[in-house]
Figure 1: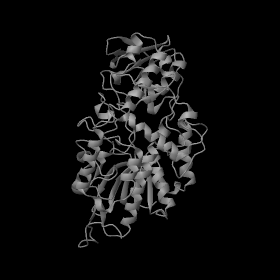
Figure 2: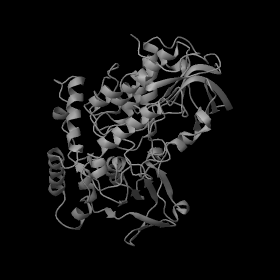
Figure 3: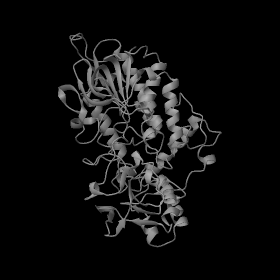
Length: 492
């Protein structure tokens, strides 16, 4: 394989595969020197490759949770994890991406060299280097598990694993502890309880849980993808703090809780003390019934571990044989950020010391020819991730076409990044993500800023960010372009 390419894409999940497919279809990839698709695992699929826990599924309608340019054939309105992974594998196979794919290859460093990126890689046969005119980070945000910082965890004497690295050995006859009550816990706990001898759930804060959606109502056959997208965008109203839609959604969730859990200690333990939507609201009809099983115990947060004993925040002790950490991910401090160094050797991690920032959720000042997918404010709290990925791909395609003129690298203007950051902060101030009374994984842990979610509708993201805006960029002169004009002007 070539050690120099026009474009290197790090990550072969939803974002990387979607962009690569568009590149091939648009004719921007003709041969092996045009694209390297780098994947640290041995297969494509990202989070849907890694998540194999029982009950894993998507709560977005399948016809919306897929590429608009590549409709899937789904077995139902809401696909399970294995079916989504199969869809992504078939995308790689059928869109001609395999010749460009390098599996077992992890990024260990990326340095801007004045006219290209120099990547250092850990390949299947040892260290490698790769030069790329442009670099796309499509590694996603659910890649670095967040583990509880409690004394004694490293000394746990039983089986312990994160929900993203599911241990498929049987749980029958075993005592199981589950830490966390987010999306993965709500899906896996009922299945674990069905198999295990006993189960204890240790939760820091309870989630808001809504009834499982009715497929005929949530994804009616009469609605095409555009109709489904518009309907999903209507849900954003409930993310506006103090809105009637938020109040109505809260009433629905409370009615669901009260219908399934009798008044008493357990209902109190299941009632959140923050506004609905501040953390992700979940969908389940069997979460609350599972918590009421005689062989299931609900306890406060995990405070410590002593051998095979879990110590909860209220001092209660629970002996278990298996410990499942459904504790989410480090989402606001991307694992690749310390590895990527732009102009003047500044790393993304340093640039983002007060929280992730960007222009159009895709480009960062001081990092020429770099594009970040699923990065700063590059996800949606009410809609499909595919909507953002496809919009970002349009910006990247426009930039790559511009770079073909050979007039120098593209660096987004500092003032464009500042203006976009100010816009995001202004929009975020209206939402439950900043006003809802919780500390969620959407917020940067240092600055408290909303850095993960786009605080508006998906349609507004596409309108603002789904194209290449030349006026937001300057051209960075290289040895062959010095003396030329250093700004991009719109074509007439």
